Length: 170
Image 1 (cartoon, rainbow, N blue to C red):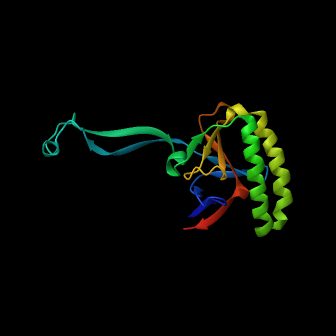
Image 2 (cartoon, rainbow, N blue to C red):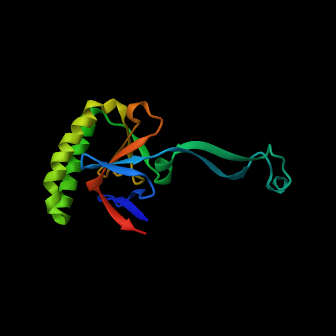
Image 3 (tube, one colour):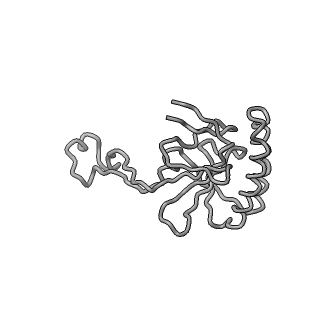
């Protein structure tokens, strides 16, 4: 299995178990889905522990909720941007990715910068259609993922900057 990690924070972002494709040579488009997560059985706080063993189903219960599999699996945290703040973040983030590429893959710098400029135009033209997420550490310098639903589909996808990730085999 391959785990994709943020080059800045080291946070895990997603794995190769998700269906993905590359768009415009700069982002992964990762297909996700909503799942139901059921947490373990709990005892109602109003029932004492000795009585819980023989308790009725009213005292014992499970908690289920519907969540996005990528958000839940990688502890993504929803965040909010307006256009001005997002562009300021993106300028700083792109500089960090460019610096990383200059050290690790210099031939990739120009294609990344050109592709990132073009893709940013796409984001800004449909800005209100995205929901933004940080990784688990919530580091403001780290990668921000964009969740969207293309063409009214029920399947949510995430845009994730591919050059902002490293791969780790596990």
